[in-house]
Length: 415
Image 1: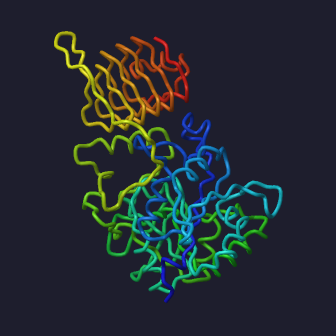
Image 2: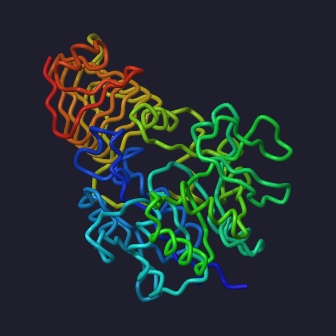
């Protein structure tokens, strides 16, 4: 049996546009979207691999990749003398003049990476989900089952499974069918009312992966996607197993975190996942030092809270919130919010249930509620955001169906 840490190459698919996350993706790829104050979405999958002991990682980029590449090259320098690396790989059009036509085509256009590394196992993971996972536990199952393909799957209530690609499995966990967004999702054996939804994370035996995507590249009727094309074919022809994400236990995990996996593909889901972080006992815990979420280090001073005056309530404080380094809460109140580095909240202002990007500034007397701000947004003195949807739209803000308000990078919001 090959040693997992030395025989696995990780390919991280990080080329997504993320159009449903506009305006956060106006100037960056979805995996580069900030999350949790200090992090980017891609930091979660990279942390999972590095914490699991896998150090050969290629990140396949495509759309608006500049900030993503900068983040990786500046913040994810491993130990090249030991053969450890996290390397961004820009789209190169090696096999034609086309961009990646699908997730399988992204790997097909980069088969040279696999040929150069000659791994026993290739991991193909997405770059834009929030979760913790000890990948070595999935690799162990993959090797024990002698699988051609192992698919990470998260149990979801059957009523919700219609929104996912769903795996039908036998009692041994072997996949017998794969159906995209089925009207009648197959149930998990021994767990009535639940179905296994694909997480879009795969482990392949290298030879089988190369053969499958090479054959798929010749098909004119294919959309060259792992979920829609490759998986179903391999289920028919090979040994495909499901890995139940509920069984994964990273070191230091608390029981309430079991199975936590969020696709932050919309502004509403992004806001909801952000609010998960500010609970008194969060379901997704960033403070597990045995499984750290790693990111770029910035040389910033500690967050600062100033003014504690009686009378008009000029008091700088934050409750049930994450406040990143470099921030100054200067006589204002922050509640149930996530603040990125270098945010400034001025006197008599209020920020509630909001996500503020790097360098945002909330001026005196302003009130912000249920908002998502990209970097360097400023709110004028006395202005309100999140209280009047029509007024918010008139000032160039995006308002979701649930009432979350989003502002693009650098926007000045008047009264």
